[in-house]
Image 1 (cartoon, rainbow, N blue to C red):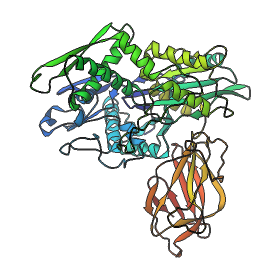
Image 2: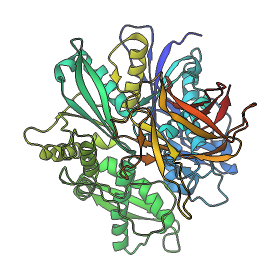
Image 3: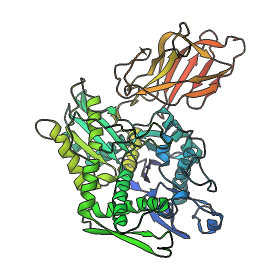
Image 4: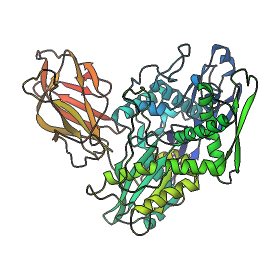
Length: 593
């Protein structure tokens, strides 16, 4: 069946949104898909967004957890799950998207809800993401029975900072949920730019000029994503090119909710109520609504937060605290967008040599310091930062005027002259990524403005050096560049190098690295030394590659071929020149003839 629609899907850390447009029209007419979901036990309503929360219910609840397209289930996604995160936090999965990018855990193991008791069923981060996507697919198929999602053109967004492993895991979850095999991955900040383009139309060419640098600052519920887009000229036409992306920063609206929760816990303590662990988690989730209420347009001067009783004092009752708008605004503005210099850097504090294995949240919540580090890392020299001429805000955090203005004031203070100009017209911040993804798909299919850029990061493989062994010391490791920054989707390259031994027939560990700042490295460049944050190790791969008939050596001489698929997925092929045998190394490994 020929596709009828282009579908843009924002799989957000906090909320997920689906936008779509008919394909066979001259101009995209982008709409949002209403999302039926449980809002209470036994009650289904449609909302624009699907909260990215998953509640794992009990057997007794199963009968009341039904959706229009399915029988009852113990797993519920959406608004009801979000509400349950405050009432029953140990049965609710949150931040599954961030867990996909956490290389310190096995994301195919059932570890969520994190720290849940043993009697609670657990789920893998990949399967949690699949559950969200399955709900989106089912909602689409329910609304559009004559145009199933698996037959449409689909664009799914991911953070620009997602590495190859996180992208591949996202792809795995999407395919398992019913996505078409040719769906496309798009970076979220680029999607935000596309949403601005579709709202602005051809006027964007009058608003931007050759040499301009656009900073896309996307602060959502769980992450901060930074991207630089430059404006250049080609054949007399303005073009947009993605120049740099930041690291995957786990700091955002959730951190703000937690900061507010600490403050409110102090108010309860003044009333003589010390919160236990369950109440503290519940308070954190309740502060999400308090933040949005207090800092939203026309917010009240005060907001009441209630906590259910847990003990002899409050059984059957609750305790309340009044939070003032002025106090909340001061706490969140100064705590997350502090005044700083462009030379300032985020601090990396460690309170103990032992660290709990969980999500790698940023220890420094100063988003302005992270922006300073990002602009400095991508300057033309070590002592020169990129000066953004324009800023595009995205993410629910920037619905608050005061937070946008503080960031503009801080950036403006770093450079002489006028500060950056805000790209106006982006009013629907929470839905912009899905809308932009739909527009990108339409432009890809029908023609239109495209942002160029290719891969946001360079990729390397670790090559163990030859030489005499030293007792107690590992052999030095060099990083061989196999994918440069900017390698375009749908392209491949032979990596020039001498033959490299590939271990087959026995267990071996293959080490991968990435860099978002080494723009000078080309395929075949061998890096012997690097700074700690310059090249970062990503997921190692431990596996046994099969021997091939006729090749008896345990270490086969190979050369590398790198490929970036149309989906934006990195594939590394190891080729034995003499026989033509090839092994594909990615984050799932298999031998190909």
